[in-house]
Length: 304
Image 1: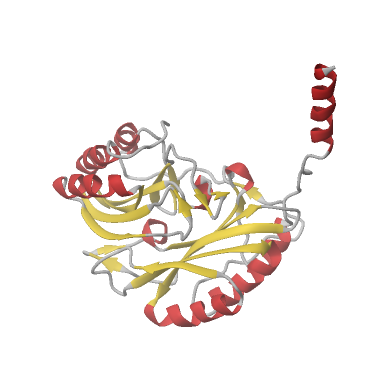
Image 2: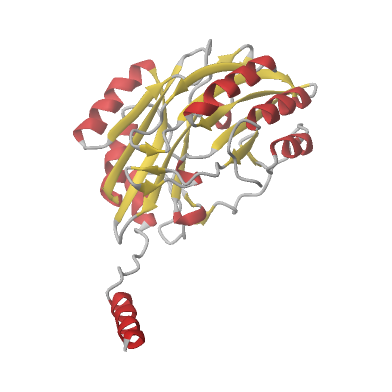
């Protein structure tokens, strides 16, 4: 009798389980935003908005957009039309308040505003954003906000084109010892816009406001390498750290000649509470790889 009752209850619970939702219409999102993106792991739709209009120099290095000037927005489906959006907008000082005004008027949260670099000319700020709701409405509001800056928007693909996946683009060749980098960091990177980018997820399940934040929404450590000639590279990015990891990483980076340039939050209701540490150096790749490997030893990172 008990077995029959348990079976009946299990069948009933399956019958009343939450229905599977379809993804939002990414073509409509791209149309509203004015820029198409790619479908990443976990169904996240990520749109890159590189600030190719800016000519930023730091310590005589002309920074490529993919190194430190890459605005982005990422949409995670949470219903047939709804999504959670997170992103990072690269802005000049005079663009900050006009963009923030539009975001506030449309109910999109600003979750952080800070620098990533030091001594760069012109100076840039980084505005992190977040919101929930109808994906197309979010994209429409974000388009209006981004329109208050000079961020370039590329022409959209034909309406019939399917959303691209993150694996569609072919690798480019760089004058960079990527083998040494991969071995030191324990994870293979990818080439994007003349920059070698390595993404290293943490072992934790990261949530914000009770919703999981996957790697494609910005929860992973990001380390970018731009070749500068003679076996050297400029590096920047951010370590994603819990409170107990912050100062061991700071001490290790500094001991290895890597400058710490910023420490701040990106989210408001994250669990575990995370701190994002930005860095800069321009030196021999093997020395950089050694220092970064030593710093990562203090962080709970997933194995590649």
